[in-house]
Image (cartoon, rainbow, N blue to C red; front, side, top):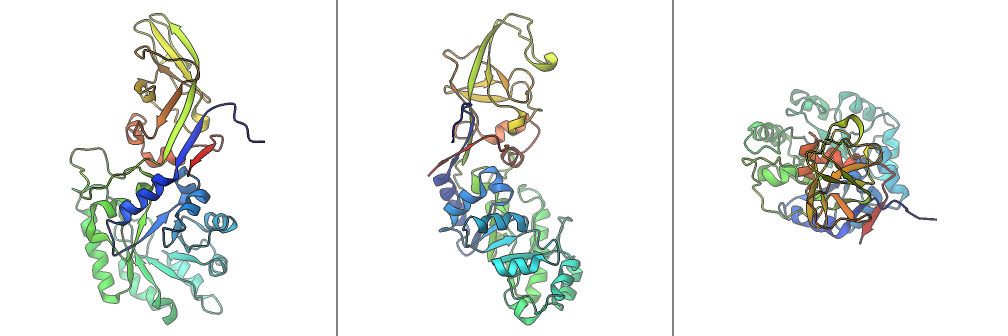
Length: 365
């Protein structure tokens, strides 16, 4: 039986997802745009997202093989790029059987590849570290690594890298990374992949044979909300997730009375407080500050008091008509997730991916 007494939902707009995909893919028409759906499609539900994108994207991307196997079990047949590559020797046989593309980024992974018998015939990517200093073969090791691959492996190889600061258009680091990568690849001439979401939007020079579209696919911007960080590419993104709950209680407070744990908010005037059915157990961060906005009946209203495990409290004194059962938007169509993230000293990526399993998803098809 599917029954939800608590009306707290993550509403996922799949037509908006498809629209975002094509808007951004059209910025790089010479590239193939891979849809990155790691971390349960950034909290949106990897299986449903994969199903809807299967007729649009040439391939999908996840972080590790376990995520890809779940997609195969659900009937997804598109090629799937494993961005962390093989985490064990045995991963190669699974990848070959399931048509996973493995991204190699350490000499140890290349050694596992060389030990495969017969020689591995699946599609391979090789990541080069151009300054992220996280994963990737060092530039001066590329020739050594390539010499260990068979001719068949080299024929379909994709050379790739990852940007550390592509969301900052006035940061010269990305251009340096592009130039370093191009110097390496000009020597070999393999297919290439550089651009993430911010790369696609900000750095046309980074558009490769494959681009890797992540956060922007979901209608969330990878660009910081600063006046100097103006997107070079005009594109309208539609939020795919709307996090929604309801008012479950209303209370009148006198001047000086406090709300919630720790008494971090006190009424400076006669106030009306609404209690909302969502809390940190649902993934709404406990460090949300007083004043963090929510959207109620076409107006913004500020948080008052500390986030609890199951509830938050909102100052609705200035809202004309509020009643128990009214819908509250925590972020989404009317309230940008980036605005909310600023009040929590975090980023839209984290808010999207931390929504817990006890918040049901409602899909709009």
